[in-house]
Image (cartoon, rainbow, N blue to C red):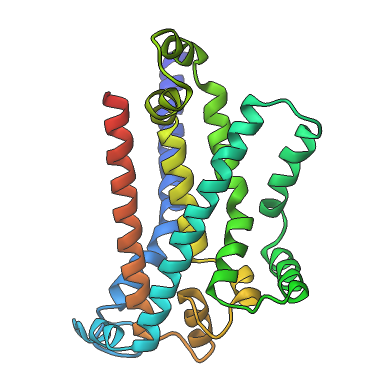
Length: 268
């Protein structure tokens, strides 16, 4: 009797957990599905029922020069901000993992500070800095702002991976006659590739849709989030839904690419 009750409770519990998971997934992804559906709606009114299928909003998107320029600016900013965070963050992670120096603990905490601070604080502080040294606002200042705000992501992920790296691999490479740069290139970097790819993709994604820092540091050039924000003050249009659909598609492509790269690494 007790066994039957326990089995019934387990089944009920599993069903409850499954329902909770479905509710969470629906809460996260149903809005995205609605966005994609309405990007193909024939009517400019964002109401049900749908009036028909059309590619009109995508045609309008690709004929909107201001929007295309904003998309290009966002890719430019996110790409160079990601490269800059990797160029600075990876050596910083190696320094934290391999070197002992005065103020090491404080240095590690200060690197995390821009990630903890609200974006508006980072934006205002860097705006004051650029004004103080006489640097005009442009997409390049946005790149510096994004790299500063996202540096902690690269440092923490790469540092955590280095902490788990088996140092005997480096010792074996040195015993076999490998020089330090060869050990770094052929042994260390392949073993931390997952952290490099993950932190790079995360930095790119966060930079691409960053608004607070961009708002204070951009000049006359708009990025895509700033363009969408200024447009939505007049109301949501199907053209914005089309842009959102393309961003979702690009995000899926990045996820698939990262999964393939990491899977190849695990297979080796």
